Length: 203
Image (cartoon, rainbow, N blue to C red):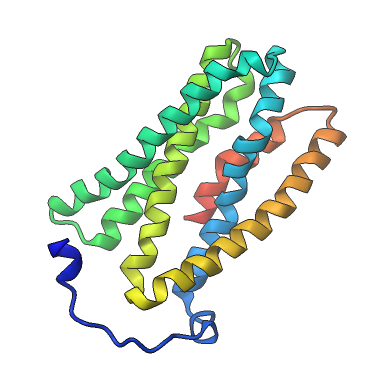
């Protein structure tokens, strides 16, 4: 609380969106969300369908695999904040620490492109757990970038702009996933190729 309260007082005047939209920093956050939010929503909504198609899991049979995946990704969210803080304690700038950590998380997501080669159910669960944990670590830092770059009174607006962009992208990506699966007769590989590289494009 002392740390939070240590910032000097800021003006209380409202900052209109029209003054935030032209800024490169706003677009950096918006595009980061637009590239990666759809991937997260893919795991939320399409993962059960993938597990059913690949391993024939019923709804009841997915309970333990999904429990493992989403608990591991929670750990990733916490670790995501620890790593850049560790870099800062080594004397790195916030900018370098944050973006280096995000690059590491983006690279950790790439192995999902090989998910079709993994034969065992729990091998797939382990890989998806790693990737969703890396997403949460990435996302924690993407949100924090906004507070790194913007005054407190504008953070909520910039996050809202970015979340809007991410939701619109997710809406289109959902349709694209359905189209890909229809055209390839249920082949998830193209979707995982997109999902595994989106974070590298975003960063």
